[in-house]
Length: 98
Image (cartoon, rainbow, N blue to C red; front, side):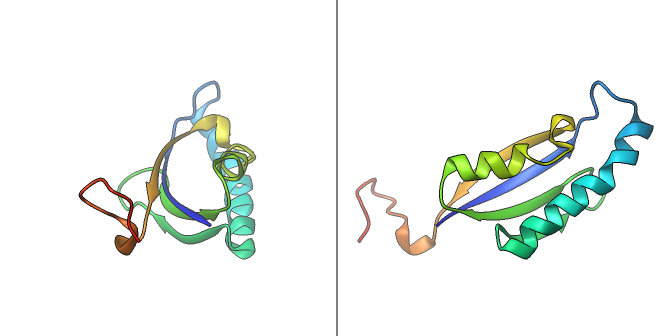
């Protein structure tokens, strides 16, 4: 499995802020489903910011993209994705670890 940190920011383009807030609960229900399935293994709300930080545990980039863009409010979110690795798997010399 692969871990990805995903920061999402609300960018309600194309709809009013009121419409975005009306649709927001659908997005929370969708994300809760991913947490229940173990796709999201950690989830935090960013205090003082819109959006959150989620750690996804998926088998592929395609699974990550599907999880992100199947969210009913994804057209109104900006995603910043960071691949994560275990410290033991990182080789600072540029060679392969292990």
